[in-house]
Amino acid sequence: MAESSKLTLGYCDIQGRAQQIRWLLYFHKVDFDDKFYTEPADWFDKDKLSLKSDFPNIPYIQDGDVVITETVAALQYAALKTGNKDLLGKNQLDAIKISQLYSFTGDVWMAIIELAANKDFEKIRDEVLESKIAPALEKVSKNLGEKEFPLGYLTWADFFLFDVLDLLRRMKPEFLSKWENLSKYYERINTEELKAYRKSEKYPKYVRYPERTTWNQV
Picture (cartoon, rainbow, N blue to C red):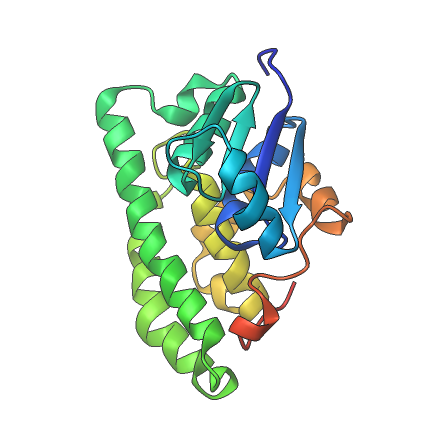
């Protein structure tokens, strides 16, 4: 990793939209402070007003005088700070394909979050997984093929896809086994660093706030 000031990642004390950034940073052994906002006033009445950004929002990454907000931009900046330039794409076409993968993954993530929030989660889980999620994973599996990663090498978008697969494995452990290449892809990213992080006190307890969701398994 290139030498730099210590990063601060600011977000709520849940996994949510910041978890993909955390996966990337822990995977690359980047030292950072995970600043959890446990009380709304700490963000809305304090830090949001003082954050040196024209677009104050969470998640954000602060790196000295540099402040980057919004999930995609913060994830890309985190990728930049690893020193692995390939994470951002080896060429312009690949950079576009990375954004394509991220956007597609975002649709799957939203479907999972909507399912998790449904009061009838236990009743509809299997039907939704088969009708909405499985067709999307078929496309991802086809795109991945025999490659180690969708682009042929690791990129910043892989950590969002990893987050989605991680949610699905927790939601229904046997579900991902239908796609052998996706299961292997997941394990390829699920390094000892990520496993250790998952067991640590730094790992956020909830996917979303309990009052906003039905399924919330850590």
